[in-house]
Image (tube, rainbow, N blue to C red; front, side, top):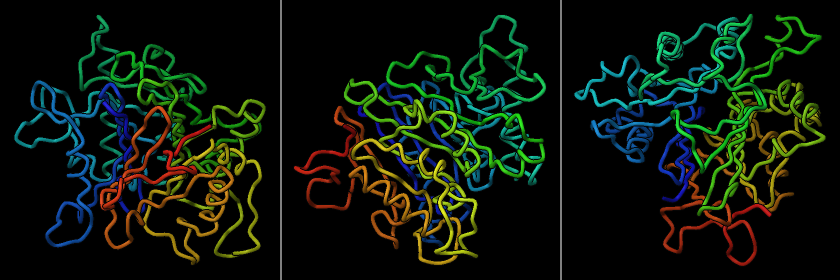
Length: 388
């Protein structure tokens, strides 16, 4: 099976599906708006159908994802979760409702606690957090250690005050590598956990909350045509400047964990991931933070940088920010790659899922509407986008 990474056109939000050569799937965030559920009365893309068309059914007839990662609990990363996904014990699954079954959840309790202290959680975020706690309790109660599909959870990052000390079997610490999906070793995939970071030694909790927009950050390594590491995919939710600055200071001597062939721009191409200056107030005088930019500039040859949001305009908005787009375009140009906005693919008026196939030469972007071979190349001579 060909490995693929698909970015769905969900407006100003994230929903990304990783399908591995083994057939296993990892869904990162979800945003299915009410308008997307009513295609007859609204032109919003029916991304629920797009997603369902890309999923398999299990022996019980349930559409499923092997793992679902909630990078952080903002509404634009979890809208539609309750309506379209089964939450609760596997035995309560309703075939009539035909929701998507989540075999394993990937959750970061410290991200949720930080978010809950700064802004009220939306109903979908509360539902996810309740489901994560249910699965943790199920793990703790399983004396024989046997956990079935639909009850599994992977905890990303240690929680505060020792709350995860007894969860070592399902805990991934920062800088550790994920090698299993849904409890099974996955030979065609691995992922390094880069964040959430604990508060710095010189920070108070209040300072940490003010400076950090916490999200899970992963560097995924995906096999293509049986070639390991054919694609490195860096994804970081809405992580902002404080996180990227710290990551560069931590890893600058060995920056390989920040390298990528495919980058999903953090916080939907926000200037706040690259600078502490206000774009709307300073415009051209706003300065890039060199450490944050360096962390986000570890592009391999032919790398693709993807902004998951609506079309980006030259205005005061942030996100998306035109200045951030220009920085990412410069990074992509230096790597002889490209910058792509999901909301502009293939056109602003009618965006569709942005899909990449991963082969032994790296990434190939598919364009269904082209009459010629549907490939966008990143190197001279018609070769697929790839890293050197």
